[in-house]
Image (tube, rainbow, N blue to C red; front, side, top):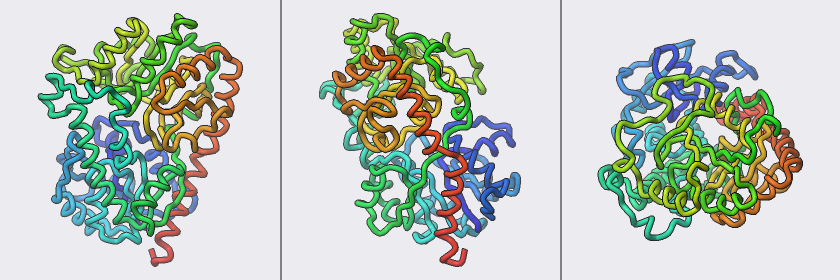
Length: 444
């Protein structure tokens, strides 16, 4: 059975073999890759992998009996569809002769190009991650109209104002919808993604398959005694969808009762200086700290400007710590140190960062939106608040801080739940079952 993966990133196995920079963002892909190479579950899979890469040439690069192919794509402009990609994928198919293509995600135009070029919906499997068509509807996440219409120097220079960002998601949504319409098989893991995709393509077969997280998050467990009191951790907060502003609106109320509260935020900082004193694990690669040579005044976005205004209004100076981009080990370190993980997004399908927090047993507060209720059982594994409601969020934070014993019980329940949902062996077995279900009736 010859399976071609169409990925958003270069797999670490390839990057390390070639001495290139790599990302552990999609760590579960590496886990499945290793299991295929070891022949687990009697999978009998010959694997090919295609991913965005420049200067790889046209031919396959062989590593460990896996055929790697590169294609050219501007990942900084994911709203732009390039028909030339279809020709490149046809070359790849001619070379590899796949029985099945597995396209991971719908967020980039190469997904549509790969599906169009293959032209065999009965042998096409599309894995749902985020859903641009739903994100576009709520992208502004209750921001004031004046903020939505604002444009900073950076926004004008990059043609990347909030309204333009929303428009880009609308264009990405068009490509996503067509990709879903052209596929015969879909993998997902929540009622939200099943309902959304079935409305777009009711004839596609939906295969439920949970995701496996990065290996380090299955080891060690959160303990309250090892945490920084009243510390809150967010995995990112650089655009409205992720709801950082809801946390900044909620925390001033929390400070009245818990004045030592602090917010630690990973990922790209849109509000300025990155402080990494709490990050004791060294960077795996250079330039991980996210430092810029340009002053904040010319690189701040309208959203960043609004966040800074909320920080001033709420007197949160010194209460917000931006950590920059973190490796898996660094992320784990921060999760084990925090009192509480918050997922405040206005919409999510199945956020990996929340899954990783749950695997470690970190107490979780999350927005009741999208696929999140499928991952976390309310008042059993953690607390859910009304999406976009800072008052309800504050109520949940206060409850977690006031009742640390119950918070720890929530975390323990979440860990047990997540260990089942994200079981690597069970999820790989399910992946192989899906491949066989698609290929064997067709003589693959």
